[in-house]
Length: 426
Image (tube, rainbow, N blue to C red):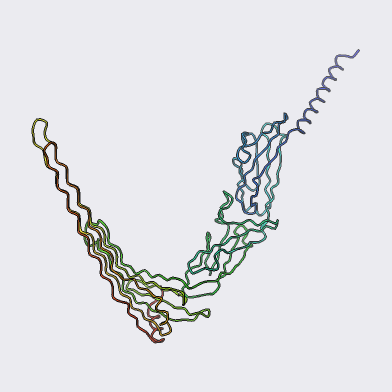
């Protein structure tokens, strides 16, 4: 006969064996899986979406919100990541640390079951090179924006294009810097206006900012057959100003334009210097094909001030018959006069004469300002008051007169050189 102590010992051993088998079965039948957002350019992405899938002991599967569109809340997990931080299913990467280490380690543990956990190593690929494809490099002029695509090659057979639109949440600003003619540009590349040097080809240096050792250079041919515009217009009058003289447009400026012929890059160029009493403007333009527009138009006349409406008449008293008439509206004020157009004199050397037809002058007077609207008459008081009369509309101003016809003076090469030196560069 078995003693009670031996029987108790057998029961404890059986129970322990049962618990061990149950634990082993549960551990084998439950697991966590991590899913990362597909097609993410990990070489430069600033954030990554991820989701967690948990298979329970009973075979049911729970998904987290966001990427996996589930309902099992993030608060059920303890999540840690190296070289970044985690918030609501997004890994925000500390880019400098991640680039140096070359990986992110994502550790996830169920908050109630310590044995249910998973560790994931996310490799950060190293950028190997930049590849550039220019979209408008056949038609780049000074001042134009250079449109190109930058491909990031990190040696895994994939080249991600870093341009708009990127994957949402991955800004391309701050990813590259551009250096063109010793000018540093952060957000976009453009060809600056040329004042002295006229290179036929301009090199564009592109640097990958997360790793400045990765750079590339491509060359942009420059087209100098550009439309040049010099603005010497008069200021417009101030509409509705109470003082009449401020409503008049200002005259267009009188300008001296110096035109000097040069040969650059094997093609004829015109060096232009436009001088007025207040400012100096310069430009280079290639001929034939370039154009020059000098705008000396007079300023617009401002609109006249509108008249005030008349005051309403008082109503009659309840027991009496007195009531007031409405007051007349105020007359509108006259509009301002347009400013007169300016004058232009062209001083050119003999070699520039064939290209002077490409220069156009605008020097008509500014248009007249309209008169102000008369005020409405006030309504008469009830019951017998008369309405006030509306005010008269103000008269329109006079249009400005046009400037004088274009005058051309041909100078010798020596006189042209002295004239160019007489006025300093802006």
